[in-house]
Image 1 (cartoon, rainbow, N blue to C red):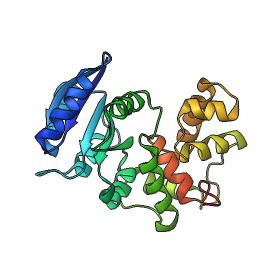
Image 2 (cartoon, rainbow, N blue to C red; image 1 turned 90 degrees about the vertical axis):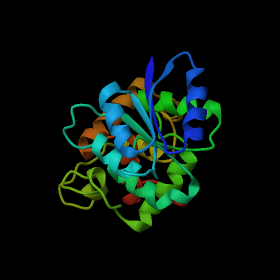
Image 3 (cartoon, rainbow, N blue to C red; image 1 turned 180 degrees about the vertical axis):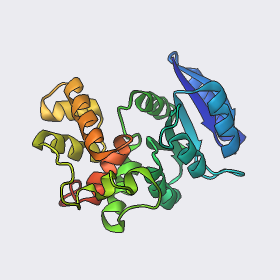
Length: 233
């Protein structure tokens, strides 16, 4: 059972998502929060597997709550999916740097919402690839987003390729990263490269270790920032 926390300041949004997810046999909504501080309290109390987090909330916004949940050496780190609209692109670029596991639109249909939760729990997808690829494409020209983790630091994916002695990817790892950055799931990458899903996961684990990336989104961000992804687009 996938345990989910919903964090959004709009009750109608929380209620709608809760109704959709509660209808799924493998998903349980364990708590709801109306602002960032309450989200942190509920996350600590219930230890959900996935947090669906609105970016714009009172008291403590979603970005600050995200940074707290994904902070280095945290004893408990859920997968945090940012819930947004298309006009939040600047916020989402910063969310990549803060460690977001993916993004989903507020008006996503029931099927996509449930799939997003499952994907985040499995570490299997960027979620809403149309949003993610659009944002990461901006990183190619905008440079590193403000924040921590993959965007900055000595082991950061956003800077590693530019330094002498930076970790090098194998040809196969590079192929996997390019497809990942284009929004493909593990299963789709496996099909495209004629390898198993297990092999894809192994390659991605190795890439994350080499780059010091916290999740797939940071790997994709590194690929876009360094011109590995989106060539010819």
